[in-house]
Length: 442
Image 1 (spheres, rainbow, N blue to C red):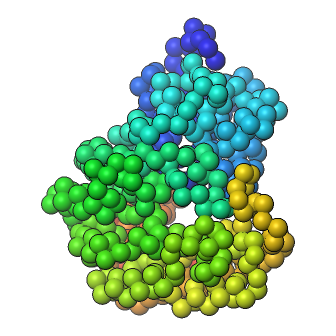
Image 2 (image 1 turned 60 degrees about the vertical axis):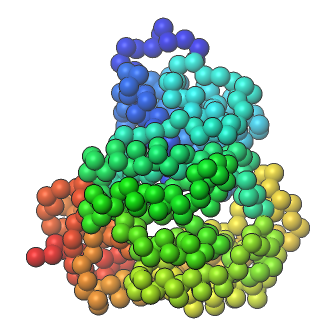
Image 3 (image 1 turned 180 degrees about the horizontal axis):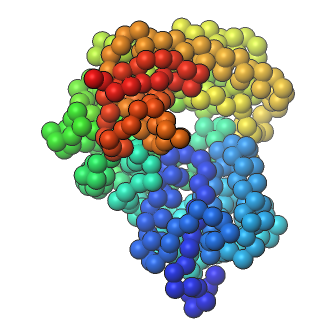
């Protein structure tokens, strides 16, 4: 892929994106850049001249899904230029999989921003180096109803199970002014919700102390945006840690007119010795439970999600039971549950007390059952309260629209909607297996 001379004048491209919201954001930035270079996005792999796979390596399953997609793509189109980027790209290069997967170019995460110049001339993987300059990704629109607003890149925490610091090892925070400018671009277009995301929100501005910290940034966003957009649009936090729920953080949440009453906590476990082995000994679950008491004073009803890892090395039956008991007591409304997945070149992969796969899956199933009950209890509460819900609808399936309310509950509506890009005031009418059926408030 060293020349543009053989490319058609109106070349077509296709993106496949795996993993986190940051990857989704970066794909959108690349899509916009390629369209400006004369590319035309298509949905059919057989019609594409170039196919870019934005990969994820956080779990072994994510990596397997990515490889399976590459094989499917190659079967569908033998002639397209195939580019692999994202967090699994460097793994693929190091393991020598490019030839086996028929990949034309590997662009490691550290060099992903080079793709903004187009897919025409790509540098070899060995030529890239991480930089502490915020990568020049920016968006002016979004393919979904709820755009991601990326504020930082990189993680240096090195949890013992996590491969991400190996792939995004350098902190790079975006300036508050650039963040507000992008938020305004999106809100001006009518997008009713922005999801504030990064690789590790706790580390925002650690590399740029002049930016303040994460809570300073939220106060700045509030100051700049709420006079015009409070009640018309909202902000949602993607994920924070219990240790971020400081007095300053709680004051910021309480004062906000833009934030959804919803927190997603990167908890992972509750047992102190497991947290210590995970490299997450800097917080205790008591910090979360104490913060919840304060949050309930200004958000009497709010959504509370978490990430959990089941079957981490050394997790005995007692630690699993403690996790179940603590999660039962905390007013969680949903969870993302991951059986522990050993990742290459991480500390935990070398631990000798690995849990058998069947046990990990069984423990994950027990956690999912618990959280399914908690999710239903929360949706039942919303139905009983009969308070209006404010829903952003993402898509339509047949005559039914699907979206999420401020409490991150999936909502379904079979009534005609006058507009997609706005907050729809709806009333809950029925609970389903997947969420709530709603109808417009009369």
